[in-house]
Length: 160
Image (cartoon, rainbow, N blue to C red; front, side, top):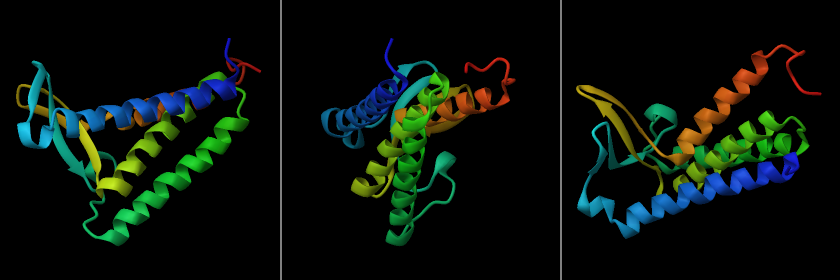
């Protein structure tokens, strides 16, 4: 079995790599900006959305100051959480933190390079439309949910 530290680094690299590879393929391979949205399933389509804010489009930033502030926050959070991850021994905490770090790095790089985060997955059903997100966003949400789950487990349920 892989030691916790190596597992964490592997997951960070996997999330970051998949997130960036898919974004590059959609932007420059499929040329999503020029070709437009396409349906993957009756409830999901691939669209191009530039998110200049944070999760759920909150705190939209139109100027360079806000953009670079979000870049710095993303990378500082990734460094801080990465340090925690590297010292952590509990496997679930390591995996959770790695998901968040990989996602923060992916979205931070988008902001630095493009000025906004590349979002593309749109889930919907009938008139219900969920927000548009990417691999990094999904990894962050799963990581935060897993951290919350672990924090509510009783201490007798937690491995030593």
